[in-house]
Image 1 (tube, rainbow, N blue to C red):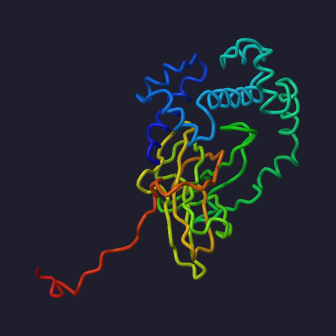
Image 2 (tube, helix red, strand yellow; image 1 turned 90 degrees about the vertical axis):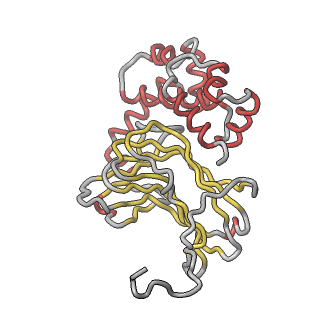
Image 3 (spheres, rainbow, N blue to C red; image 1 turned 45 degrees about the horizontal axis):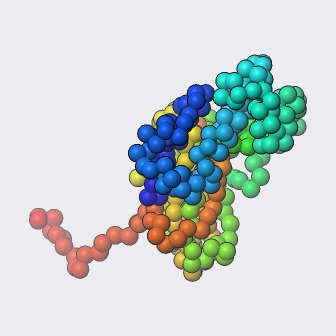
Length: 291
């Protein structure tokens, strides 16, 4: 969390320049940090080097272009800064297990299959909840992705009132993380979010008491934003029972989620826990309302 702002700034810049040449000096100018220090921070936070991240995002965008356009493979390769169609094909096959031409054919056939569309409406392991979940839709998107072959999405359909919200979420047992400090991180993209969107995570006890909680209320994602990395860090007390997490969307808009990770972090990593505790007075005061 200490360097989250500079990682987000760097990723924002990278996302806007994927079709251009990007040098190590460009990254150094953006961060203002020493080359080796920042690259260590980026690797630790994102799980890959800056160079690997840039290549992965170029290939993900190339995969989307293959599916949604009829552009020639060689033109796609050059647009995303591969020096030849052969080098692009090698890199693409390593990530997607298929050469670009076969990937285009197979994935387009899958998209036309009605059964595939029905399957995509159900997202394994996830469910939708919130104040008005029936006014929202969740699913998987094979066109707008950050990495791999699909992302999850949550979007408004028939939202009427400002207070309506929904969440695409999961719950699991806390047993494996008792006594640990954990980080939930992922990549999020938004479109026309009018009120609020963000990751959230909650730690509950066996008696359903909320022990730890953060919904990015102090750093909401609003409006239209390209893919970027966000995270939440919470402690898991010994009396924890359930960990719940997901993506929240309040009001109208669309949000995509991809590349989620759960990791144990050291105690030097600050938590993002939102305290709901109140400072109690020593005794009643101003009972006559005249003070």
